[in-house]
Image 1 (tube, rainbow, N blue to C red):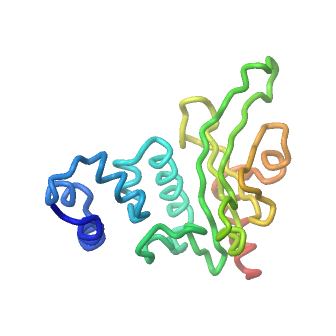
Image 2 (tube, rainbow, N blue to C red):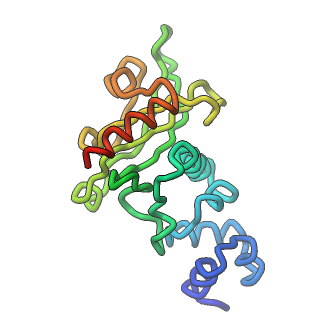
Length: 193
C-alpha cells in the first residue's frame, strides 16, 4: 500500500488525476479528497473531478485566466494551492471566487437575490491580504458561469464572508458591466502597484 506522500508526489510529478488513480488502484472519490486536502489539485482537475463548489471555483479561475492571459496563476508555481490568492497581475494579487445565486423566499419583491463568497477568513490571509477579490456571480438560477455578474472588490473591504445582495454596496458599486470593463479596471490598478 502506497503512502499518501507517494500518491501526492506521483500526482504532482505526472499532473494526471486518472493515471494516479489507476497506478494506485484508488477510488477516485478518495483520491480527489486526498489531493484536495493536500491542496494540490490543478484547475482542470478541480473542474473535471471536483465537487460542484470546487468545480465552479475552478471554472471561475479558468474564466479569469481567459480574460487576463498575461496574469500568472500562482497555483501553477506552488506545490499546494496558494492559501492567499490565485493570480498575480503585474504584482496585483487577485483571489478569484464563484457564488451561485440564492433566492430569499421571504421576500416577494425584486431584489431577493443574494450571494456569498469567503474572503479573508484565515489568519494567514488577514496578515497577507489580497489586493482584489474578483467574484463571478451566477446571474439566474441554473445559469452558472453563463454571462455572470462580475464584481471586483478591493481586498481591504472584504471580511471573512462577503455577503452580496442586489440592494447592497458590493453589487451596486463594484459590479463590472462586462469582462472588458473588468480588464480595464484591474489593469488601471495594476499600473499603480
